[in-house]
Image 1 (tube, rainbow, N blue to C red):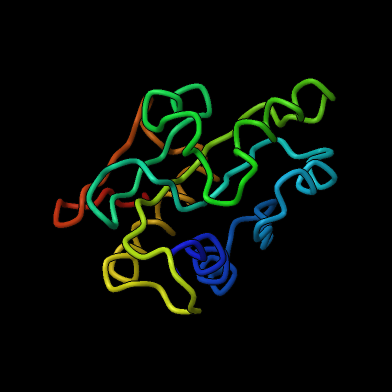
Image 2: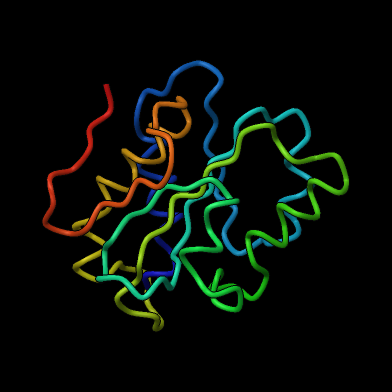
Length: 156
């Protein structure tokens, strides 16, 4: 269910006309397999469900160095391999892109299913907008957090 927010966001982005040089890839739960796709990437935007202890549907956009303050180290990923583990290994191998953003969404339901829960279905446009803003390097400095029901930031 909500663990699939990244796939839903990528599919919504891929249905749009995107600027030149922006590519959407469904990485699913590939973890370390993502390393093979990083060669030549200048800006990487990852979208994932993150258990942050916030209201379901809360969207955050952060740089990896800001993540540890949001989520306990053992809860950074719902897929077993932490996104930070993958990025640290990418850096050690000289594969980490110069700019990395993570768009995280607090899940409501972690169970079997192909549909998002109502809070994440409602948050999907904000997730897509945050991913697009990150891809275009239009995010404000520092943490961008959008709580459900707050006015949403919009892309220029």
